[in-house]
Image 1 (cartoon, one colour):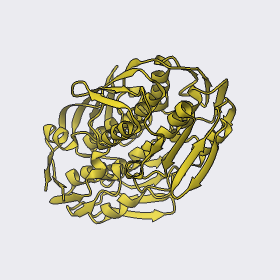
Image 2 (spheres, one colour; image 1 turned 45 degrees about the horizontal axis):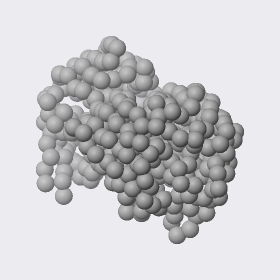
Image 3 (cartoon, helix red, strand yellow; image 1 turned 90 degrees about the vertical axis):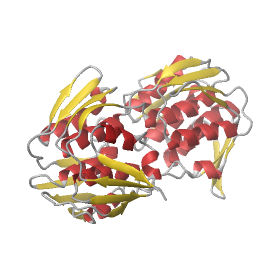
Image 4 (tube, helix red, strand yellow; image 1 turned 30 degrees about the vertical axis):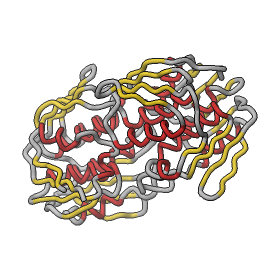
Length: 417
C-alpha cells in the first residue's frame, strides 16, 4: 500500500506553478458530450479524477486523445450508450455531471448514484429537480437514476441551495433545450464561469455565469472549440497555507488572485504577508500565526475546500481559533487524525474549536478525503518526527505531483510502498 512519509521540514521557499483547475476540467470534459465535433482542451491537470472522467467518456462512445502532456482532444461524434456504469460513477461524484449532457444530446440517460469523498451526503435532489423542470421524467431504481424526455424546454428554475454540481448539470442540459432557461440562486464559483465560457465558445448562449442569475438560451447544435482551463484556486490556496504554516516564502504562479480573496484575507489576518500580481501571488510567513475565526460559505465566501488546510496551520496559532463549517455536515474527519498528532481540537456540531500552540508530533494517520490529505501533509511538515499518511489515493484525486512539487520547495517528503 502506497504511503506518503513526511518529516519536519524547513521553511518552504521558491517558486511553484499551479495546474489547471480540477473543479473546472471535470464539468468541461462532461460538456464535450454536447458536441459532435472535436474539442481541444489545454492545461489538463494530471489527476486520477481526470483519468476516471476520460475513461467514462470513452465508455459512452467519445474518442479521447492526448496531445502532449497537458492537452486533450475529445470527439463525441457518436454516443454508443447513454448508461454510465457503476464502476466509474462510484469512484467520483463529479462523474454524475454526464447526466445533463446525455439527457440533452440523447433525450435519455441512466446514471448510477454518485460516489466520491465521504464528506457528507451531498444529495443530487437539486440536479433532478432541474431536469424535471426542463421536462424530464425521472425514476430511481436499483441504485440508478433514469431520465427520459421527448424534448427539453427552457423554464425558470430556482435552486434551494447554490449547488455547484446542480448549477453545472442544469446549464449543460439547458444548452440544447428549446427556449430560454433562467436559473436563480445559481452557484457563483469561477469554475461555473469557466464551464459557461467553454460552452459559449462552442456556440452556446449563456449569460450571467458568476452571478446568482444565469440565463441559458437553448441552441440546436454546438460546434468544436479550443479552450484553456482556469488555474486551480484550491491547489494555489493549499500552497499558500503551506508557506505560512512552515514559515516560508513562496511565489505561486499561474493563479487568478481575484479567485482567492477569502484565502488571502484570512492569511493576512493570521499575520502573513501576501503580495498580489497579475497571475502570481507571493506569500511570506509572519513571525507568528494569529488565531482566526473562519466560516465556510458558498463562493465568494471562504471555501469549504480550504478549511482543513487552515486547521493544520492554526494548530500553532496564538490563542483559540474557531472554524464553522456550513457546507457539508461531515467535513471534520481530519480533526480526529490531526488530534493523533497532538492538535488540541474540540468538535461542537458544525464547529471546531482549536486551542493554539499545539505541539504536533509525527504519527500514523490516514487521508479521510482529498483536502484532509493535503492538510495532513501540511501538519506533517510542521510536526516533530515522522508522519505516515495512508489512503493517499484521495490526495492524487486533486493534487498533481504534490510530493515532487513540495520536495522542490525544500520539504522532507516522499512516497513509500
